[in-house]
Length: 320
Image (tube, rainbow, N blue to C red; front, side):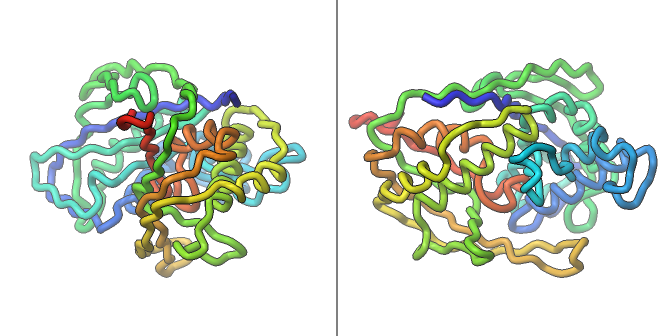
């Protein structure tokens, strides 16, 4: 059984609307943009317009979280864009409107070394609430922060109340359970995979494409944000993955776009949603990657909550 070394911490932020707030159909891009601008205002001391020209680029909290610098070494030097060590989960607010006094919540996951930056990130979220978010720049107050004791356990404890001290828990590396007798993958948010720049739709979707993207993401997250190089014969694993079959696939394309301030236009971000069963023959070597992937997501737009999935595990009698 493969063992991973990437600590994960999941937080739930409870917010109270101060003015009307209206979110778009998919709020991930809205949260990410507001969060990034607020974090940069919070921590930037040089005001250099281009982070890559700043002397503090490799040590700055903002760059480490939002513009992760390219790494050093044989693996990292080949990478054009490093994966970022956070994931926002915006489903609860997507397409929602909130009146003053109503409560909303946002879940945020931090990975590896980024867990130590939590105080800066929470301050940035407070700044988002003061400046406003969504249509009409609705404002909110951060009233409480909870943390899941162990990823996936469902046990949450409050680590900060409004104005109180932050008492965060350490991040935890999820334990990999034994492989069950049946596995269904439910794509909770659009999964956007590309092959030679072309989006993969349901007719071309395979387990091999899915697991290759997931293994690459997990490997790079370990290298950049945990300082660990995962070793495996990835070429052989990819060939092995081609033999894993899909069953009862119910996948459809969910189209949406976001506005990119950098590109000054709308960017298509559609992806697959739905579910599929996995054949067990040849799956055992991929089971640890699949399990961990539930917390790191897969494909494009993961930081905005895209590519989120859950595993339904069956023992032959009932779901675990």
